[in-house]
Length: 89
Ligand SMILES: [Zn+2]
Image (tube, rainbow, N blue to C red; front, side):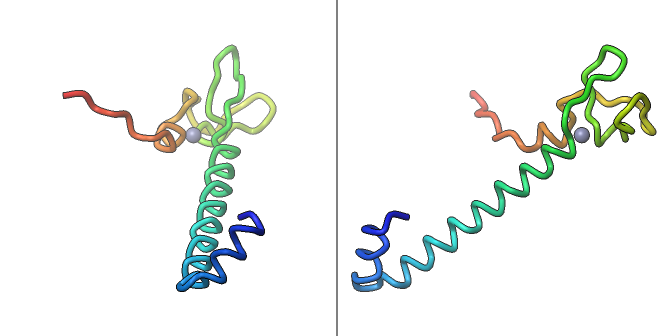
């Protein structure tokens, strides 16, 4: 938050409570973004024998083989990170 906004919130009635709550939400959001980035790094796309596969779901060894059957990328885990699509009725 900006210094000006920080100071205004702290000085206002209920400002401290609001200030702390906003900062807690911001910190929670940052932690959630970092968690999503870690999941995306695990489930990263790699090229394997001409296909783009998920490194994690395929248990790709980083060189040439997979311990699991090669799984297409984006995998269900990456798809689950996407915002839900609006349904039209
Ligand atoms: Zn995956």
